[in-house]
Image (cartoon, rainbow, N blue to C red; front, side, top):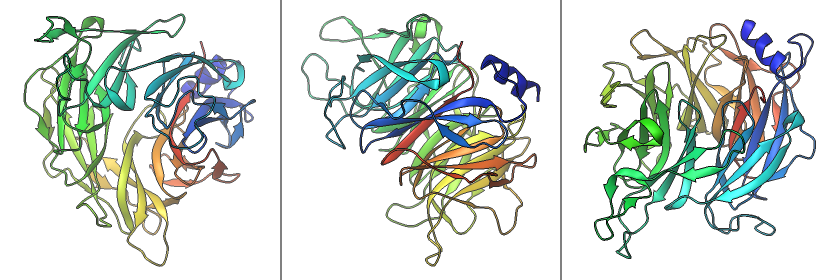
Length: 409
């Protein structure tokens, strides 16, 4: 309750009687837009922010991150000709759009930035909130050589007053042809997502089902603690997330199948950033959930005792629901299916892509490919239920990911 009150005061409101507890921004690729919502603290209901939807700034927006404090939002535009591509200030190539956040969560476009590689797909901030990590699926060539087989992380420092991004050079590696420092940090092949856990930055590489580990140092530097990449033990890894001191990787199962899939838990070495399997810790998806694509560690209050998994399809041919499946996190990080017979997994809108928990830890929301957002209330035991005033909200076409902020200061 203290957390709810403090966040509400940051918004200049009380925590009683249905005030706004936070803001939500949802990306959509059909029109390259961002749908904005205010989150009601009493019901979890979403109401549209004034002037929403906003331009995403670039083409094919796929990832969104909020700088701690809520004053600035960054959107990764993958690039390409998907959707409406006219009047985009960043053009149709891959880019990062910066926005300032005003009253009532209104976004104002600021400027464009570019990562060092091509096909940017994900972004995250470090634990201090001072650096932005942008994940590119293709690293740049060195001095005109053929493109390397790997992806990269582009690191930017974030100006606390303007949100402006400044490139951080790789002080560990030089271009052998020019003798100049690299402008990026290499990772594995076809990376799709990264997670930040303490002082570790871990990228999920889907070409060989591995994870590349970096240790985050001073001034934004990333340092390889080993040349080894760690196996995910997954047939088709789709996401990597951090929470509760552990890393969780979703495995959608054998390619080209409607597999229930599973959730794989790992501990991470504090200094080595090594990935270590938790024995007997795998969470097997409950029937009829299938094709898991994203996970979230959450729970009411300050405790984060549950993992929620977004599933895009089902093994039940008579009831084609997408869903969220829920697991308990045991004391050693192992997973146990949450006991809620007949309800777990919980139905959501078609084709969920990403999930967030609201700033007061009462509600979970999925962004769905059908252009909607689904909201669920979290009980103290981790079970989910529909919101009191309806759980489905219209966002923007071909929805991808979403983000929330509890305050602006």
